[in-house]
Length: 251
Image (tube, rainbow, N blue to C red; front, side, top):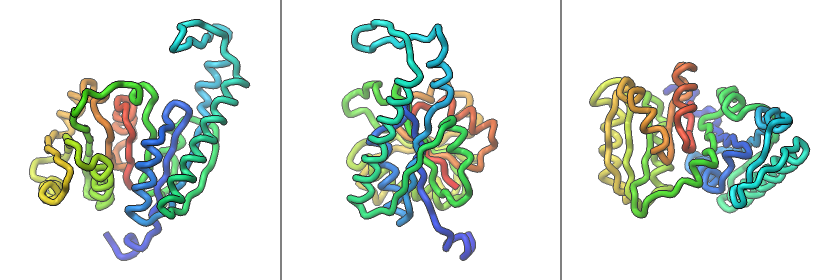
C-alpha cells in the first residue's frame, strides 16, 4: 500500500431498503466507521422492483398474523418505505452521535445491490443490509456466530474482521476463510488474532472451488460475510444472491 493510499479518506457506506434495514446492521456500520475514524453514509433505497410488483392487479398482500389477503397499493407501499427510511435515518443519527461519528443520509430509488455496487472508489467499506427472512430466522441457543471471509491482500479486510469479532465479543465464532491457496498471509494473521482476542473462534479454510460447491448449502448459515469489491462481477452476483446475511464489501 502506497503512502498516497494510506492518506486517502476512508468512508463507510451502509445501503439498505425496506426489506434489509435493521438496527443491528446500523450498529455494525457505526462501529466500523468508529474503528477506522471515517465518515458514515447511510443510503436508503426505494425498491423500484417492489413498487412495480405492488402495482400489478394480481398482487396481494398476505398478513403474517391473520393470513388474510388484501390488494396492494403503490401509494401505501411508498408511505411504508418512507416510514422505514425515517426510522433508518433516526437510528443512524442516534448511533453515530453516540460515538461522535460524522454521518450523512440519502434516499434514492433503484435496486439495493445495483446502487450499492455502483458507489465510487472513495467508499472503503460498503455494507449491504440483511433480508427480513434472515432476521426472523431463529438461532439455536449458544450456537456459534458464523463469518465468511473471502480473502485478498487488502489490509481493510483484516480491519473489517476485527470489528465484526468485536460485535460478537464473548461469543463462539466459526470463521470460514476462503483463499486462493493454503497457508496464505491472512490465515497466519488470523491465527495470531486468535491468541489475543477474547472472542473464542475456530477457523475453517476453503478454496474458492470448494466454496462454490457448498454455497447453496452454506448461504443461509452465515451471520456476516466480508468480501472484496474486486471480485469478478459474475462471481460477486452469484455470492450476493446466495447469502442471506449482512455483507461487508471491502475496497
